[in-house]
Amino acid sequence: MAKKSMIEREKKRQKLVTKFAAKRAALKAIINDQEKPMEERFAATLALAKLPRNSSAVRLHNRCQLTGRPHAYYRKLKISRIALRELGSNGQIPGMVKSSW
Image (cartoon, rainbow, N blue to C red; front, side):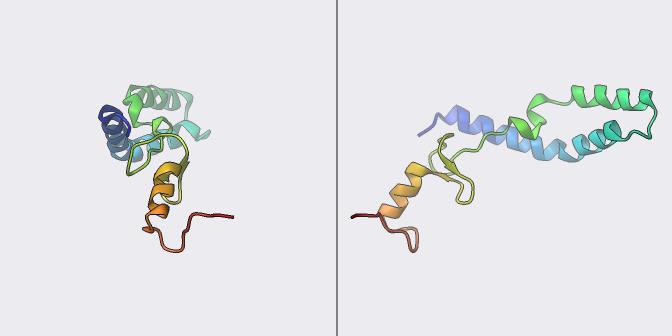
C-alpha cells in the first residue's frame, strides 16, 4: 500500500489539471499561432508560466486504484499487476484464471 500522502497528492494534482485544462489549452493555442504578434505570444507565455506547476498534465503519475502503487500499472484496468493477480486468484475477474502447467 502506498503512502496516503502520495495518493492524496496525486488527487490534488488531478483536480488542478482539470481546473486549469481549458485555460492552459487557450494559452498554448495563442503561443503556437504564428499569425499572432510576438508581444501577444510572449504575454501568453508569461501567463502560462504563472499557472501552478501541478496544473500541467505531464506531472500526473498513474497509480493503482486499489493500492496506490505507482509501478507495474495496467492502463486499461487502472490497477497494478499485484492487485490484478490477487483479484484473478480470488476469481473476481471474469475469465481470468491463474495459469498452471
